[in-house]
Each structure stands twice: as C-alpha cells, then as structure tokens.
Length: 82
Ligand SMILES: [Zn+2]
Image (cartoon, helix red, strand yellow):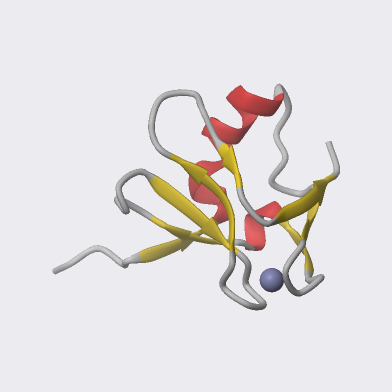
C-alpha cells in the first residue's frame, strides 16, 4: 500500500505552529494568484518534494514551502490571518 501523495493543511499544523507561534489551521489565508481565501487546513500539501509544498486548492499555486527544519518560504500567499 502506498501513502497518498498529497494531504491537507492539518498535516503541517505543528510546523506552522512552531513558525507562527499559534495554531493557524483554522485561520484564513489568501492566494495572490487567484484570490481564493481558504483555511490553512484546507490547503493541499505535497510531501517529500523535497520537503513539503503547500498549494492553493483553487489554482494549485505554491502558497508556502517547508524545505526542512523550522522554516517556511512564502510563495503566492498574499496574506494570512494570525
Ligand atoms: Zn490560487
């Protein structure tokens, strides 16, 4: 049995809590590319790309990436409510 290739934003909740200092799973973020506003738990997470890549559920743009450690790169994330 193979693991699913992608998960939801809950799969990176602990990492994002370490980075932002709060659990942002239920907080909203906005995609700069298409304007979709979604809860962070609703983003699409691809594992081992390498690291994790968080994509917009509306258009697939890379919102954030987590290459490893306690570090995230901001891609097309216009804003996030914290
Ligand atoms: Zn989008």
